[in-house]
Image (cartoon, rainbow, N blue to C red):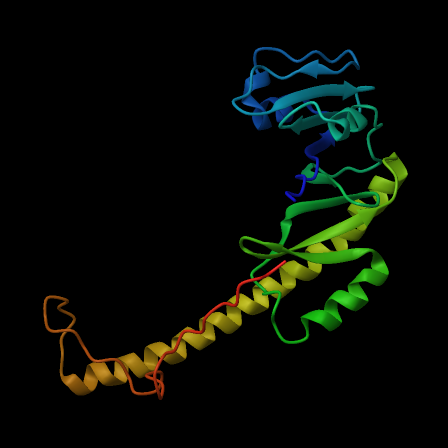
Length: 226
């Protein structure tokens, strides 16, 4: 049975500053209605979108692929008490909701050593690392579509984002050190061949270190029988 795609919407909020809003949303440069009501964005290519200026304090925007129930719930939401200028992805979960962002993505893999232990203690904060096309993405769970619940989830997500940011910096450093080591092996072979930096010459042999032993072998995937 085909699973239903979870309802997803994008929520954006920032302190109200008309010039900044117009810079972020060029489609609104023709005019912004700041009357506290929700208004349609100019026609979008794929999504439906609404925006409003709330009490001349906050600018809110909501997008979705359709006017689903989650989209409607977000339109009823008062702004969170935050000075952040950001974009979040909100998703309906089996129980409650989740919030994530592009800043919570890491190339750290789901099958990496220690992942299960990390996932276990992260859940005590109602945080998870979910599979993402670029690796893993940090997600915060919250129970009710209420301003206070969403703010709490956003703050927990920010904590995870900052941890992931440091992880990514360390991974980048470690990756750089690793490839520098591989390059040194390549350079040694290159120097031993007496080659110049003319790529029209013959291909330089690779180092012995990563040639491996034995042969590759594929394994058949067993069919599932119902």
